[in-house]
Length: 232
Image (cartoon, rainbow, N blue to C red; front, side, top):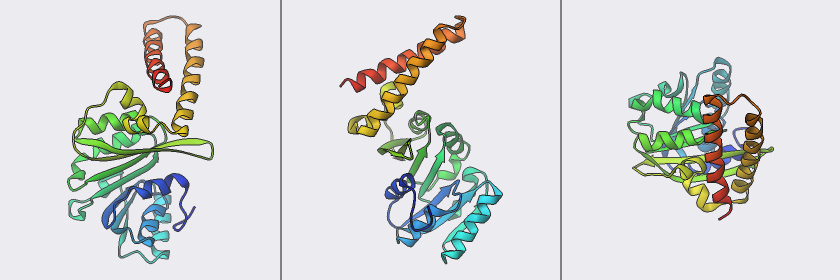
């Protein structure tokens, strides 16, 4: 992967970045995504935010090597603290982290989202946390994608301003992914339900404390929701 050739998952994230937007890529790593989008003429300007010193330095080198130092600013900052109000950022991308971490970043810095119209999140797991955050903070899902790369399955969630209500099933599986019901979507949830069966069998052998029983109930509820959808 480099600034001209993204991984499959980042290329999918790039597809959802609007033309001529001002972008903030949070956890930018090597700044591959903003450099790629600038090379393609998609974005006006970008902030590449990185909290770790090594990737921050790597991002700066990549931006300079591509000749974008005047249009992509690399900042060493924690999460959305990389964004200033004067930047007038319209689109935020956060990719390659767990859904819970992405949610904590959005929650901690939500006052920095004043000008933001679209958030594109690519959680490695636990996408439900992002969907729940969205409905609690004035965002709705306008698109979702799912793909497999190198044996791992990734979801991409596209949020825009608005209100929506989602059922527990839609929060877990994704309302749009559920409607698309792609082979990758089905493979992911077949895999998940098999793992849940294994976990339930292990929990049945444990001492049946209140905590264990609650965990079993939660897993069983999710299992039933998913199997119902897969049977449709």
